[in-house]
Structure formats: structure tokens, C-alpha cells
Length: 249
Image 1 (tube, rainbow, N blue to C red):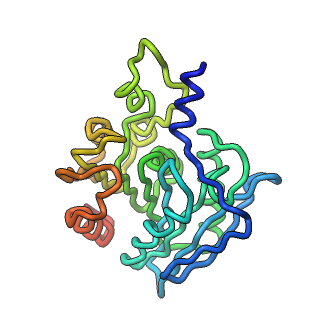
Image 2 (image 1 turned 30 degrees about the horizontal axis):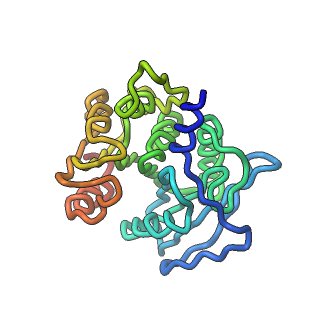
């Protein structure tokens, strides 16, 4: 029980922001607030471009808040998509209790709201690290235009058991990305570095190997670590080729 509590604290590492915190980013943006339940509010950022091709919904990693992730997500506007990122419950300005079920339900709620209000032509889901489990689940529900997974894992039990032997702990958090994506037919791009010490390369490769989707490509970034893939030319070249392809990859 103590180990479960410790691991939950490691998996979910929110950093709070004051409700009146002012974000400051170079790209044009607006703040959004979603209310999936009466006593829950989710803080979000909407980075805008002129004549967007669609929207890219960004699901960030397990640590920090939009003060950090907004900078990273905003870089993706270069592909001429509006980019929307939101903080999970208890992260940043968001309220409520974070859990696997709440993450999934909130992702669907935000997606539904965005689809109804923005009426995008295309929807790309982008997940990073922990966010890959959320993006994979939502993709299995909605069949997006495309899905991008940066440093993903096969599922949470496989990831945790790479560090903690099964004899000591059986993970209660699932995030079963391989199961969510097993019937996928939409284009999927998976990016993983060979020197990732947080989500080992073997976990992302296991996920890719489990999929029979002919539109899936796994990109190996040699020497890439967990938080520096965007410093590699191959990362940006792969994103450009994938996003700008007309429905095929």
C-alpha cells in the first residue's frame, strides 16, 4: 500500500499555480476554462494561427503545468494548426483530483467541447510521456485524423515493472495504450529516443511492435533522451513529413 502511494506520487507530479497567474507566451494565445463537473475547472491554452488547417490537442507529461508545457506545445503551431493544451486536475490552475478515469473523462469532455465550438476540419492528437496514455485512449474512442506519440509506453504495468519487480508491486494504474490502439486505422507516428531513462526505449518499441496498423511509423532517435527529442533534426523532419502528408504516411 505504501509503495502504491509512492508510485502514484511519482506518476502524478502536479505543480499548482495561483488562480490569478498570468501566462506570458510569444505566440498569440487565449486562456480557456473547461468545466467537466460542477466543482471542477480545467485550465487550458489556445495558441492560434491564421487560417488553421485544424486543431492539434496536446496532452502533456506528468510533471509541472502549462507554464512549462505551453512553451513546448506552442512550438507546434509552425505546422499551421491551432494548438490547445490543458492542465489535468490539480495541475496549474486546474482543480479536482487527478486519476486515470478522470483523465480519460476530462479528455473526452474537452475534445467534445472543442469540436462543437471550433468545428475543425482536422483533429490531430499529440501525447507526450504520460499524455500518450490519454491520447491513445481518446484516439481509440474518436478515430482522429492523426495521432502523434512522443516517448510512449506499452502500458503502465510494463513501464513500472521495468523499474520495480512484479514480486514487489502489481500496478493498479493501467493506461493500456496497446489495447486502445489495437484496432486503429488512422496514421500514427511514434517518436522515441534510445537513451530515454524515464520511459525506456524498449517500452515504446513494444507498443509499436504490438500494432498491426499499416499507417503507423516508429521513429528511433539515436541518443535521444526523454526531454530533448525536440533538439534533434530527425524529430522535426519526422513531424513535418507526417503532419503535412495528405492522410497517408
